[in-house]
Image (cartoon, rainbow over all chains, first blue to last red; front, top):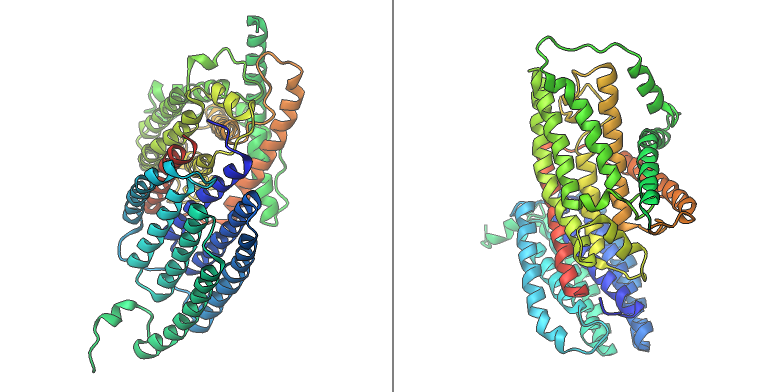
Length: 221
Length: 316
């Protein structure tokens, strides 16, 4: 193996952990563990951003790492915990496809993403070039989770974790987006999560359940 | 390295591992007892059990075939050979070139076939049941185990455990992200293969869901002692394979007698940590239904596969 500097190795390690966590979320049956895994994913994301910031001397990445810590590791998981306590929804996660099949689809997605990213990585000269495939893979995995879950809370966690993947893709492809864009997206996510929270209450009030299945029949009664 | 020194290493390691294997089991049981707020039997309990069993008279069923009587010896021999191949203390092992990791998996499979046949030999329903379950777990765990080992082999370009240890532990330190996946997959295989929670409960003979204990219900005295000793050896073998792949630091280089004390100390510390971790894992998790086991092991297989993919993307 050619000698990659330690920071590059660390970024690769965090990238692999991110993918591992995306898979763990995909196979998770319990909603509380799902939230904890999401918080952990945020933590890994923050650490990898810190390493990129340190090794490339990009000051604005420190700020986005700090925002990631506050928002994705502390605020959003806390909010989600509060939400499921309020809604009293400690059920097991229900998925449309069973979990082994989901994992097989997941592997196929990972291979697809790696192939997709291979030509880009070869041309890139950044320290994080090989992590792009993993970033795309974790975006697709979160997307898969959103599609295959039946309950609203786990779909929202899928959405948030997809944003984690996008953030990581941005960090690995171009050392982060411009600060304004990054902050804008982060607050977007925050607001989206809050609005989702409000929606949860409304969905439950209308249907007495958080199963999205009920939303398919959009008819006046 | 001269031949005599290598042979001496081999003998030292083989004898040492056989002697400390019950201690590893005792340590795991003791840790688990502590975590469950029991005082526990002490870490020397497996030796007392073995001693007691060796002094008893063996009882055999009337219809027991010679295979039933031979199996404990075959089992013990397989496991002893297995720990002889794994570099536990040093990488200079004359046995090691004879068998790589694939042969090692084959050795475990051989032991599994014999214990399953012995379980069915008497014809009790429990034995047959346990044997069938064991074969099901085995056939699912084996590919996952092989994929895990292949991930390490891809990095070191060799399927020999000695070369793997030399590449990972005795050269310049490099982080291999693929090994994170392989480590988790290996841990899951270790739990399944050694009949630990969440696949099987090692501390009961009273459950309809037992796997390993169901197969060995008919054994007594010295046969049972050998079977128990072999299963503690198997646990130790798996833990040392895990150490060799994922934490190989401290293992002495070939022909380096001065490194042996350090290697011994490192081994004790690592085994203590591994045993503690195993007990912790067994305390916090519950045994899963047997029909969940295929899913558990499929997850292990897929993680190992992912590890290989990651290797090609990040480390090639």
